[in-house]
Image (tube, rainbow over all chains, first blue to last red; front, side, top):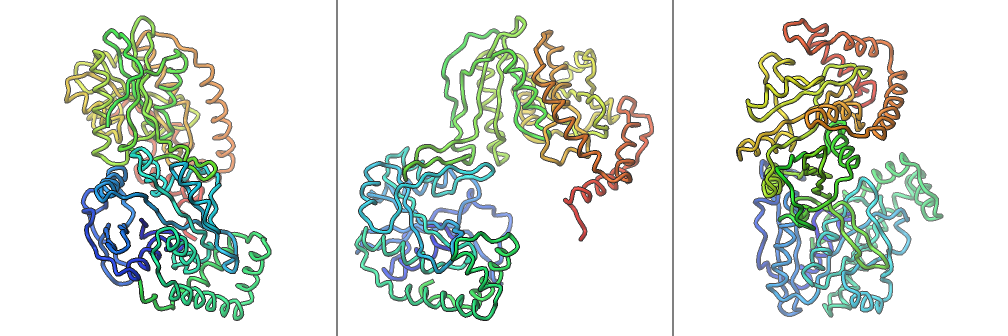
Length: 261
Length: 294
């Protein structure tokens, strides 16, 4: 499961890649009425949008995929509907995929963590290299839990084993798909669910992204300085962070979308 | 969605008094102060999950521990020979439909115990100066309560303020009484005045809560220890005074004109006009950087 609005577009990016790699078929949807504001429509990149919440299936891999815009109304009822579907399909486990903001440089290795709603899942996750399974967290004052955390709790109430997978995304990648974080998540899913997906296109995408930021770093001393500070573990000032984010987003937005998206 | 009962207290024609957060948190401070003062005991809670988005998630060692939601709790106590149900909502539901559902759930609990009267408490944004003692606007949901309200000291009817007695009450403070009217349950909404220039700040205004409490306890014929509230009032007053000293003298002069405003006579010409009022708010907002033009 993944949400279309996500840090580093991680959930949507990973799901788009799985859908394309496994050639899944759309098998259902959650009707938008009641869960999204339908008093009008959003326009993005010159195109009218409409909220989508779709289920896809790969019979061969015994896998159900759910990709959705995050509902703005009646989230409890919406999440219950998705869990109804999971029950209907007799889902053994649910994995949600989401990004979390990292203050580290994009050149640092991406960390992936897993949060579970059942103890037995934790010992299972611990067998996978590169997956952090011991995080402590509490929502800071003034913030709210994510939809994935809400789902994790609801799944617990309904006795459905669920894992929230969180991939770190450097803050200055903003809404661009972080291919490197995506690669780590997909590598885990490949191993865990025996999906046998070829991740080469994702590695190429990741290298292209890194190359573009590297080029920008060479051209702009300010960007270079900021990234170097992050690499040395030095926090940036808010205005430096914002400038870095803006510059990187500008260059990444010129990139053509990957074929699978 | 429903109500979880921890106990079924035996209550005799209780009053129900309800509050949610709102402007200056006037209502919730008033009702919660009284609830604490009389040591009311919790007996029920509304199931929150389909009314609210959760507050916080707690994860320990990679495992979900808990997800917390805004609470909506019922308490009871016998106060001055009268049974009272207190309802404290930590948050108002996000949609009109859910607000109406909550209003009816609260009334369901009240009626289950034979409730005969409902009170809600909130804020009235008013043209008053912060050095003034706030009045209480009392709005009943039935004409039968108007004469009773006239007996309250320091409370006023809408018609005393705006001539025709018209206006509206946003949120559950109003909706609960509208739903109560529909179900034949009489009630009064008590609105403590908050100075217009402080109303848009995330600031508690306990002085208005005290006024509400004075009206409420007078109408119930009880005494309550409000010393804790008084020290909170003093603390907030100090903060407002500090803020006030930083306001440019031109804006301060405008605010000080509010010292001449009186709501008591609707015929009385207001010392500042609507135009003055708009300019005043603009100046204040600009000063606090909310509507800067740069």
